[in-house]
Length: 188
Image (cartoon, rainbow, N blue to C red):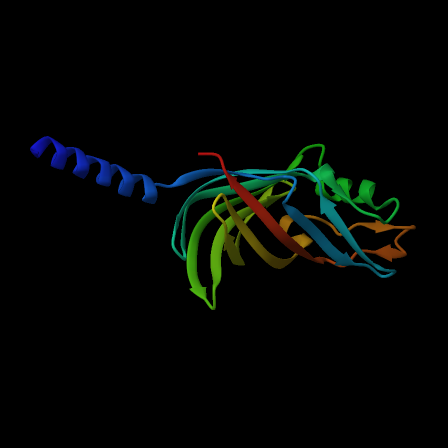
């Protein structure tokens, strides 16, 4: 009888411990989307990332998400645009030869309002790192956590000179907006 009670307690504690343990996730490149939007003196433009990678350790409890670690990166030259000739200038401005990766490293949750997390993390672009506050909406399923949001910033904040073309006639605006929908799938 005592052995059964002890065994039952051990099983219950193991189940409780397992259910609240953090899980490891990785970015699902096929489902994730990241798009950079900007404008110029001639037209609006956008570029979509085709190679997004990352890992996270997340604890999902009911409606709460605890992020223990989270990062993602994308290859600068995986940004593709439908505007002809733009990619070469973009890669040059991003200095992808010296700094091939654009990286985001989560630091902390600042707060939450109306279901939107206010987060802080380090964004590294063209070799320059800046701490950015980013509002993020989180959606959860059994084996996925999706982070969606948008952030605008000036390229010059990262030491990037906005690209020009046609002997300076075409000038890209300094401010860009990044829309993201990054899907992390559980791996443990």
